[in-house]
Image (cartoon, rainbow, N blue to C red; front, side):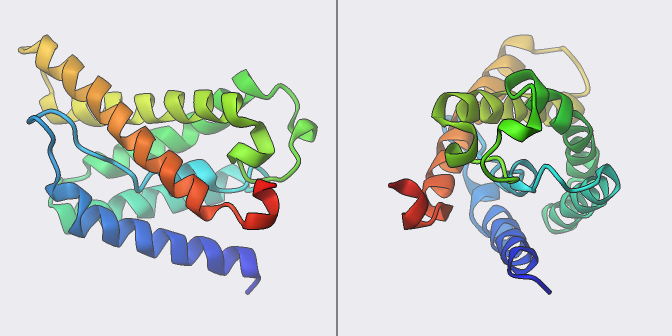
Length: 172
């Protein structure tokens, strides 16, 4: 196996364990829940085929569902996120040739573009997961608060993970 494949397998294992063991038990002010395991889906290479992306996303969501007892909510949300990934990335990067590396990151996209991409994808995921969880618009203010603050918290943690993941040679 190549070094990149091993890196993503290790990243996936670490993110799933962190989500299940730590982040699922954090709920700030009874609204903000960090959902950081989706960072793997966001960080997968753009050159990866849609079939592989959907398969990886499906199983990533399924593993989190199994350990979190969420009955397929993460599986559906991750699969939809994977389907929307390329069109959303094309909103911010019209040509894939403009990327310096095939993996979306602050270095390859630029800070502003990467933050917009990260915000859009995290907001989409949080909207889908909380709509499925609520399955009603009975309390729309609480639903909106959960979506917004979970997006902000998740995005802040993922930016921290991204700065940690970037090799020192790329930061210069």
